Length: 161
View 1: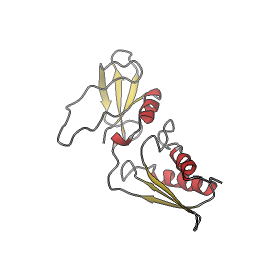
View 2: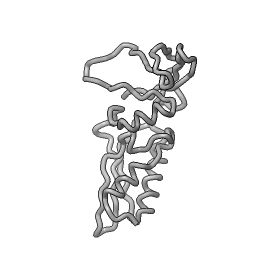
View 3: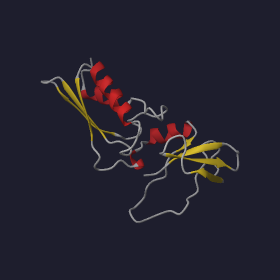
View 4: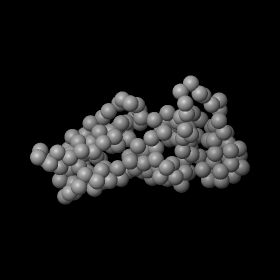
């Protein structure tokens, strides 16, 4: 049984993302809030999915529900779609973990109205920016496939939203 809101918050944020198991849902910044109502014995968790069609959403809800039940609370898992999730919510730890897994983290989204045209993408293995796009889609819709011209290794880029 979890006894503090901080412990429950940490427990929820440490749940692995089902599509990117090397990062947690806390690393991705999709956990909006965690609250406990001790009188009712409930815990409310609010999540913002990375996008409305993300196939991992149901699995994330089920994993959060299981964690809240294991912590001794009746779960109330909700989704908030406003404000929309942005890759700017990925934590520094999340960006490092993506890079360590061979996935280039997304660049900052930037100011509204400012668009970069085909910015160079750094290879997560050697750091070279001599890379080229192979496909707009990687293993999941949120990633694109690249290859590095310096080390010849293929890698994925987590797309910026």
